Image 1: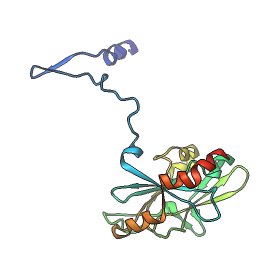
Image 2: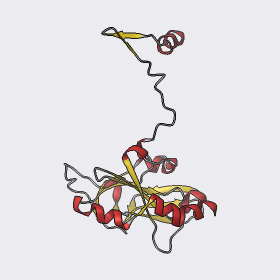
Image 3: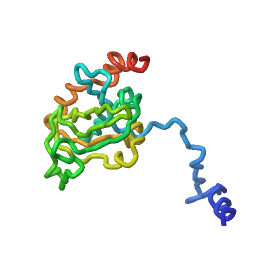
Image 4: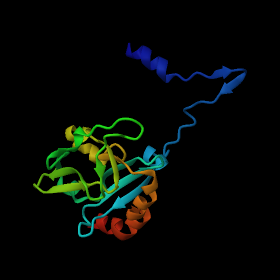
Length: 192
């Protein structure tokens, strides 16, 4: 059966449609094609004063959706992440239920609201802040089962937050751009 499938899928046949030869898709393959994040999101960073070793990354989409997660230089990666929990105080962020276009029922977050707690192998616990004032749309429940997802840009977000349309520019102004972050923190933190 495998030989039949290989011969079917691996043989490229020239196709002619309306007397025009269809170009091969194999020849059009671009190896270094930009990722989904590179194409559709703008990277911003939030570094809380006094906690420069705990930077957070915000991927800001043009439709206002913000993916909040850990920056690659976060100290938790170095220490080894043991667990992620969305139970903050008496509130379980994973039970947040939203509905409709306006995301009714979403929890209102401030920049310093805690989204999740990350426990490292050495016992230290780090808070993942909201970084964005807006509604909590969802948390990434897959992180509870697969902690390694945190390392993946795009898939490793902690939460999805949606700011109000009129607050988007103010939110961006409170965050650091990729260039500002690299200049102020990125290069130093990678070398430490």
